[in-house]
Image 1 (cartoon, rainbow, N blue to C red):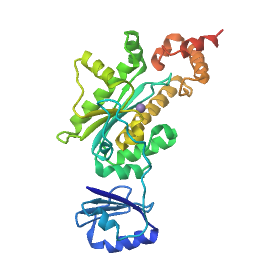
Image 2 (image 1 turned 135 degrees about the horizontal axis):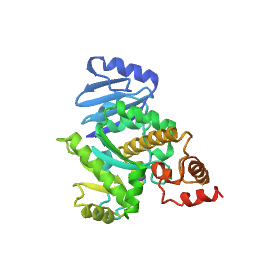
Image 3 (image 1 turned 90 degrees about the vertical axis):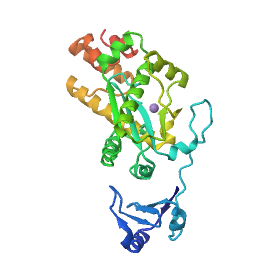
Image 4 (image 1 turned 180 degrees about the vertical axis):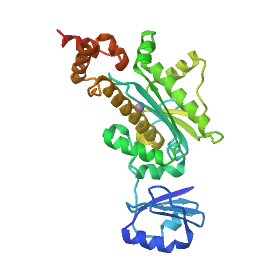
Length: 309
Ligand code: MN
């Protein structure tokens, strides 16, 4: 199926709308108008971006002036293991999965998986979906809300601090926790979208695929078919970028909730500011309380004690 994105002027947008008057169909959320002609779907956005999709996409788009938007030059994919995806996967209808909170002393680990069908990719890009690491928490909240308005099927999960600390004390690595969480959200999402089957599942790689598969095996689980791993997956795939925003937004919500619970803003990350916050928390509520709001095996717990002397 062809796909062309053209950047046109406001004037052209208006002319287009008039030209396609008889072919207009229901306007999707956040779009200006949409039309269907000659087996091609045309979706126009306020920014002047117009998406042509279908067998005559190229032909239909050629009727209009304005630049064909050259897509961001994506890093090329090097096949480094059997689970490296083919680049075609990034424009297909797939499940993407990503996590947040793993490097933060306070707050849980959150994981989200999102199913993005190929016809929603451009819309999500238009809404600003990209690697959540490049976005402020404020924009993340806004974009996450927009994602929900677009009816993107997703599944998310929170591993709260008491549970995290218990598993850690039992010898679970973060890698194993993340593996089981990714597996759980993907499994739940596969159930939600059934009988639709994704063309693939892409996980933002955090360990060697073999290690991931071994963790699953020890818990009597196996990798779903057509699962792929690549590092920096959110820069390649909108489905993973969508998941990364949903996971991060869930993390931010959780840390806000915990902040209310303790009575002051818990800082993110694992810096000296975090050590200080941990020590005032110990002073206020006792060291045992950290188990409720922090990943206690982090070095921050020990560092916090030095502030108490
Ligand atoms: Mn990630």
